[in-house]
Structure formats: C-alpha cells, structure tokens
Length: 376
Image (cartoon, rainbow, N blue to C red):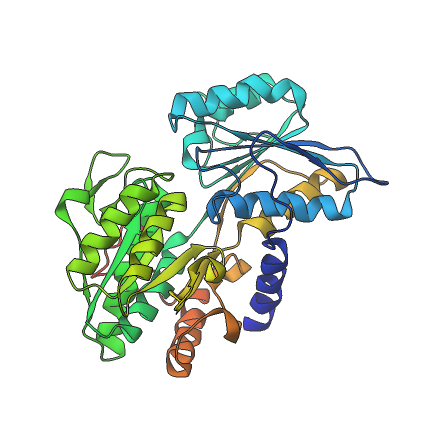
C-alpha cells in the first residue's frame, strides 16, 4: 500500500531532478557500454521542459538511459498544438528511431503509423490508439491512460480541508479527457470533503473559460485553451483570485506557470501542482505557493516499457493505470508540501479507499458525476 507508493514516489522524484534537460531537438546520450536503443519523444508545444506532463515522460526516458548507457533520445517539439500536425511530426521521424514516446491525447492517430511500421515500438501516453477498422489493440503500441480523476480527487480533498476563504478552483489547459478527469475528480474530492469531513468549500468556475470536451459538451471549469500560454494562465488565475479563491489546482502544463505567478502576487493564495512534484516551481522571495502536488506517475511507467523492449517482453496493450498500481497519488515527503498533519491523515484515509475501489471519483466518461459517485 503506502510503503510501495512511497518507494515509487521517491523514484519519481529522483527521475524528476532537473540536471539533464536538453532543449527540444537536442540529442542526449550517455557515454559507455549498453544497448544503443534510439528513442524519440515527440511533444506538444510546451516541450520536455514544461515542468509537468511532458517533462515527467522525458524523465522516464532519462531514468532508463542511466542503466542503458548507449541509448539516445531526441526531444522533438511539435509547435502548433494541432492534432494532425502532431501525428505528422511522428510520421516525419519514424524511420530514424526504434522507439517513439508520444505524450498526449493528440497522438492517438499514430495507430496508422504503427500499422505501417511494425518493426517500430510506440509508447502512447494519455490516450488509446485510434482503431483501424475493427482493430483496437496493436502489437507495437503500449498505450497507457491514467485515472487522473483519482489524483484530482486527492487535490479536491486537500483544497477543501485547507481553504481559508471557502472558495477553491481548478485551472486546466485544454478539455482533453485527461484534463476533464482532473477537473471532475477535483470537484468530486471537494464534494467528498464537504460531506464526510465537515468542510463547506465552493468550487468556483468562470463561465468565459468553460471547457468543451471531445464530444462538444460544455464541461464547465476554467480552461486556458492551451498548454503553453502562461500569459492567459495568469489572466485566469487573477480572475479567480478576484473571486475570492485562495487555492487553485493547476493542471495546465506550461500555461499553469501563469497561475503560479498570479498566486505569488496575491496574498494567502496557494496552488496545488499536477502530474509531478512542483514544489520547486512555487518558490519565490516571500516563500512558496505550492500547497502540495498530486501525481500521475508516468515516468515510472515509461521506464518500465523501455525496459520491457530491451528485455524482449514488450507487449502492445491499452492499459488504464490506477492507485492500485501506484500510478496515481500525492506527495508524501514532509518538506515537499505545506499540508497540515490532519489533512495528510485524511488524504491517507481516502487514498486507501480509492486504492481499494471503494471510492470511484467522477471522470469524463465513467458515467459518474461529481455529486454522485461510488463512495460519496
């Protein structure tokens, strides 16, 4: 349970150390013996140094390279954010690499490329591949999706327990399923804390920044509309602060840095980091605005699949990863969060319930809503 999660989280933090972060397009290699696996990671415009989603995937590759010293990685940054352009960026380089890691929902259509290149391996993060005819599974694509709603749930519980104003919010990038999962999980967590822990927190939404999901449904929330627009992120953050919000859960990639800045410029306002431990991102002259961070342990799972490729045990599949595989969670180290001891105890309590499947927070397509989900 928590022991195994703590060990995996410690590995994640080691991988997230910021010493080796070549800019997009740079080739990184470790000298010495080992197998010369050629790896590419193709990312959204925010690149591999976004301090969040893309970087965690990249860190999984770097962790693998530490034990496979002739492996190389090239970080390729697709600059438009367009789905068709993202897939084309993969097609442009597929001939040059053994493995291509594609973090993001926008890469789901690489299934057609995988079919045409059966000798290449693909690690798809945050999406299942688009079916080709009746085929949904591909021998050379390991697709991992995460129950982001679980990590969002932990953020919502923490925010509800720690807010001083009684107003909290979640700021997202684009209403891809993973982001909506975070949003609805957060709202579920606030609802749970209000009902079970005696809090009275309100989730604030700005109608002008409501999100539209992949089915063209208005999902509400606060969406920047981009993962690489910190200026608009700050606008959204400032507007929420003006509404009295004092804790913002930020799931917006590079755009989230603008929300962090808004919190730093306000008084008594905190953020909850997303995907990775973002405590260092919250430091400024007067202290630190990161209350805690909730985790989606991508780096560990990317490294696992690269190891499987080297060991000859790689199998294409579409996997949904949850707390029961230590793939979702929150920061445990005392010097990496600012939560009260009481809040941590309650988070550990609900973590075990989520891990056991007793609590199933609402997600974009799981049939539950933030005010009606198993365990509420």
